[in-house]
Length: 409
Ligand SMILES: O=C(O)C1=C[C@@H](OP(=O)(O)O)[C@@H](O)[C@H](O)C1
Ligand SMILES: C=C(OP(=O)(O)O)C(=O)O
Image (cartoon, rainbow, N blue to C red; front, top):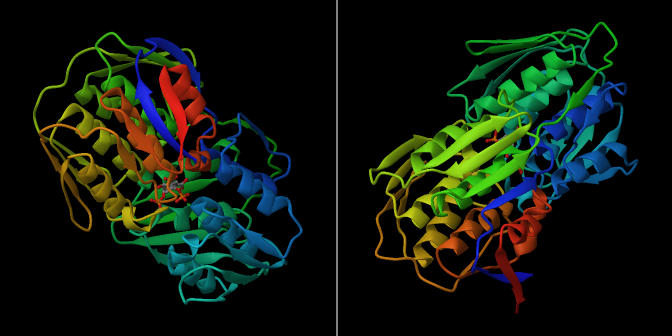
């Protein structure tokens, strides 16, 4: 479905309800498979969470996670370490290009039986589950934090627990911290000091109830909308906490530079455009929060602000090569963009081009990050349905804000 987007009259004080965090949900679904007395509330309705649930519940010998990176990585460790099942774990064409050898090597260090069915180092995988003892693993921490989370979630079920030694600069660290905090919340002991993480074997029954906070990565698109709106525009987002487990909650601090103020009231977060941003180059390191890179670069284009985004080396192994995709689409719109292996630089432009068709490359965040730009120019988004990977009601919510959406050929 290709759509055109236009905003004639923005609704200035809407309330939006965003579904539960997909990162929290997918961790908790895996923990629930290990500890069935765990109750989860405000679960994400995203495709990635749905597929996670289906793969855990189905008796099929071939499990297909489609585009869900978390499901691919978390389930690899789960089937390898916590079951006696023999399964084939596969995913979309893109998933088969996203590396997984770091996690497979770590599992093999523990004695797991995981082999590659196609290209070495990539899904699909043949996993012959074995109940193992646990112990110590060493792995590279600068490729994807999901490998580490996968080991920590499954590690809690091993009789000897798990010690993980991290090599290199840790990427997406807040996602590891989220995992540890969730383990702690449900009564599993774990610690993280320097480059060593320990998860201790569970001795008691786990019988907790956890309420998932709404998704902060999804909230980032409303930050962008408010940043691109006139002073005085507000939006209220439901089911958020000031003390979040999600690293992307830092969007509230980052968007102060774009004139967006954030207020917390009970479980609501209220965003308000309070001033126009100062015109100075913004430098941000997004090594901890890679999923914000697309949102922030489009906001900067919309406000005609220069920015230098650092720490982006993991973007090329996400749903698409996001650095390449951003370069192509921002340039199409008239942006002055430069990208390297791990940075994106945007300089001031002479105007944003109208009626450009944005390609989304099977990447939900390409569609959602570019959509707010319709506040500045009419634009088109190709394959707009990709958003359901993480945010099923995204377009509905944009319509609620006053965005005029039309399906085009
Ligand atoms: O653990 C998680 O839930 C996630 C970790 C991050 O991935 P990397 O660790 O691969 O950067 C993030 O980009 C992804 O959307 C979700
Ligand atoms: C990178 C993402 O997801 P995953 O790696 O889980 O596919 C994302 O949601 O932006």
